[in-house]
Length: 208
Image (cartoon, rainbow, N blue to C red; front, side):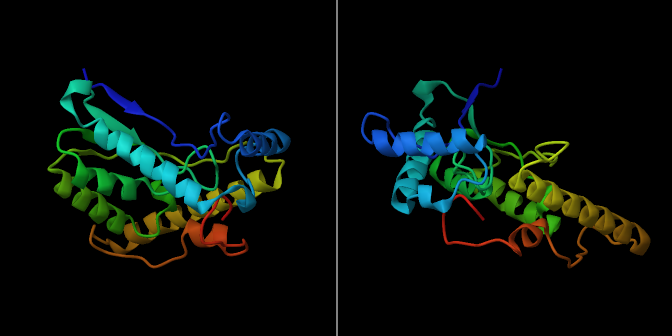
């Protein structure tokens, strides 16, 4: 049996230490009825860095045999306070170098949103090599949060995912027609460009 542990790595405040900030963030989420679309004004970079490093330190500590865990799992979400891990492969690379025993499980890379899947494969292969073969990569399907999007953030998400599906389909048809091998490459616009092109981009925070 393989026993591992997992957490979403949320951005949060201690209600006993900073009750006002805790209530302000919670009230915003309740008001919008969603974690997504939380304004950047609720994000403090210094606080976010402190928490994220704490999560990484916890996973490094789990590498000790006395805790009896076989692995840790990472995931990623984007533009939301319930998960600070926006690029789990970066965290996996850190853990690959800082741990010796644990399996590093990824749940999972959204392949349809990646502009160049070959690059993703190379990145994962390097992480696996650094870890000594302890990486357990995984992929995941992407879909709209709602089949009938009603809020602006849901409509934007649905639009981006439709764009990703179209690009993925075109890429597959092109490769089939041209007989491209695995080391071929196709240059096109990724879902990130679709999502970010009309959005305000800030250095750090929740909203892209």
